[in-house]
Amino acid sequence: VLVVGGGITSAQLALFAAKSSWCNEVTLIQRSRMVPRHFDIENDWMGPNRGKLLDQFWSLGMKERAQRLKEARGGGTIPPQLINELATYSSSELEVKEEVEILEVHWTDGCFHVTLNDGSDCEPYDMIWLATGAQNHIDHYSALSYLREVLPVNVTNGFPVLNTDLTWRAPAGEEITEPIWKQVARKKIWCMGALAALELGPDALNLIGARHGSVRVAEAIRRDYDKQRNDNNNLEDCGCC
Image (cartoon, rainbow, N blue to C red):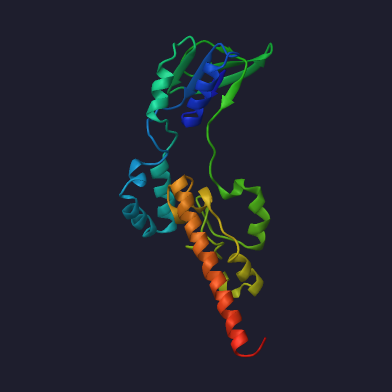
């Protein structure tokens, strides 16, 4: 098995294959050096300085926020304990090659023949597992395509520009000219996870970011509920209902 990737998933897959009885040899390759890190973002974002970092993040414009997201998350990282576990295997069982890339792949005689750019000989593999990650870009979410036609949203570096309560924000100037039903619809659509990173910060995709996002959404729903209840009470008091 050939595993391609430089993050935690590639390490987990390589170890899974190495431990399996059906696999004799595993090769793990990545185009950079291994980066040991306990979390997939800078450690400061998981510690007591998180609040200060978020204040700095929210003080930035959207383009600067997008750049900060890229800097904080970086590329693929692997927890130190997994790197140590990879090192316990002999090279005949699990070989790790860093700073290499695939030059060519050919399917011949029932297997993949792979040539790397490190000058090594072409090697045959029964399977190639790609753990190369994915780019978080709103264009990759087909379920949102029609929504964006009906309710346009500004996009910065692939991330939608949301309101602070994570609702679907109208582009500047359109929030007033849109029909009432569209304005109401926007207040009923919330976005969390990676696509909410411009509001939640670099940890939007992690558990702490999910909690942060859920609190914002819950508070927005509560405000909407309280407003509707107060409006209904006012109607009853005036004898209109």
